[in-house]
Length: 189
Image 1 (spheres, rainbow, N blue to C red):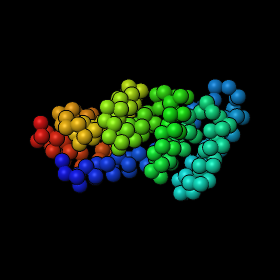
Image 2 (image 1 turned 135 degrees about the vertical axis):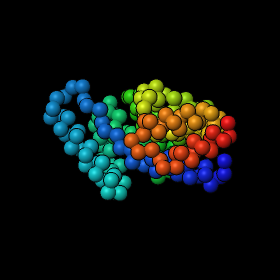
Image 3 (image 1 turned 180 degrees about the vertical axis):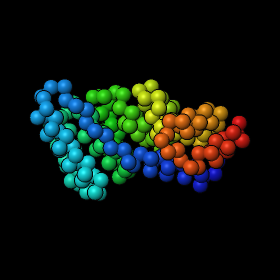
Image 4 (image 1 turned 30 degrees about the vertical axis):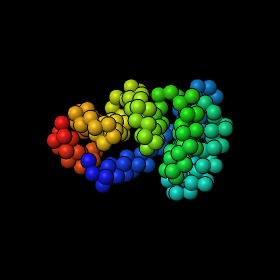
């Protein structure tokens, strides 16, 4: 596969992941008042992030992570922001903290797979993608990322075709280039 196509696929993955915002899990204790405060604070942090004020968003999410260390949402968003800023080590640290609280957090597992793939750790990337799919078999970004891993990095086009077709069924709006990827992978089988 050409490097241009590989770069395009990697860009698609980053763009696909860029919009991921994860909400905190509801508290198990503390009642509705605590949940209302958490929801309001979280919404303010998300709004700051969506407006591009990453400094404010980061400060708000960090405060939430300190105040609610058992909630994965603030930590996951800190990891996502670090990932988007290409601060891989920081992103991994936040994502690992998320998994300590919620080992089946599909977005975090998927992001860790992307980080591992970028580092050339393909077996680890596959483990993360498969863990995400074990938690949610229809999580489209992990399906597509696993397909990319097989297609581009591991030279397993037959496995990739199966995943591309699965992604086509799972995604609400599959990438318009999907048919080309399937055609290309089938030609290499």
